[in-house]
Every structure is written in structure tokens, then in C-alpha cells.
Length: 153
Image (spheres, one colour):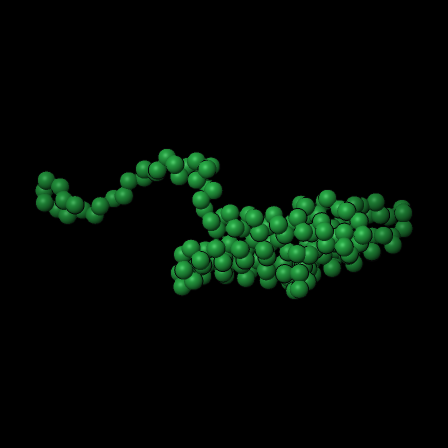
């Protein structure tokens, strides 16, 4: 684009947004978002049943809890990466970003968080064995179910 002086200036995109893209209903058309949210919700829902199957008890806390089978974090990021790949193409840089993001989340779930949970288990046992007069004897136990085994991921 040029002005009256004849100097060429780059075109600047205006920051006007389509009003429909700002509505909450527009999110319903976002396939990767819907796929990721649904996968995470389904995985959390199944945790209630896997707890019932393994421990023969219903535990509604599993609907919002972390750790356990199946991994809702892994389900969410996997669904996101696959949906992005299907929508944008598996050769796109957006898919590469989603795939690397999924890999980091799953590595963290089966590595760092799993070992943090094991450390919490050991620390809880140490605190449990303290004499009652010890200042830490009454501390609340740490959460032990933080991460996932590789098969859960």
C-alpha cells in the first residue's frame, strides 16, 4: 500500500475480530478442544469404575482426583494431538507442538509425579512412626496417588 508521497508501506492487519469467534458457542466447533475435554472427562469417569473393580468400593472422589487408571492427563493430551493432526495435518508444526506437549505431559505423569507419590508414601510412614510428642506427629498425610505407572499412561 502506498500513501500520497508514493512510499510503499506494508499493509497492517486490523485487530478486528469476528464477533461470533468471541462467543462460547464458537468453542463447540473447535474439534481439538472438544476431543481433549471429552477424552479427559471419559477417563476421569472410568476411574470410578476401575476403583470399584479393584477395591470393590465406589469412590466419587476419583471423578476429580489425579493418579490412577486410566490417566486423564494422557487421554487429554493424546486426544488433543490426534485431533490437531487430523485437522491441521500430521506434517504441520501445530501437530508437532501438540505431540511434543503430549510427550512431556506423559513423561511427567509416569516419571516425576509417580516418584513424588512414592516419596510421599515413605514420608507418611516416617511421620506415622514418630512419637506422639514430636511436633510433626500430627501433620496431615501427603497425597500418595500422584502419578501413573507406564501402563496407566
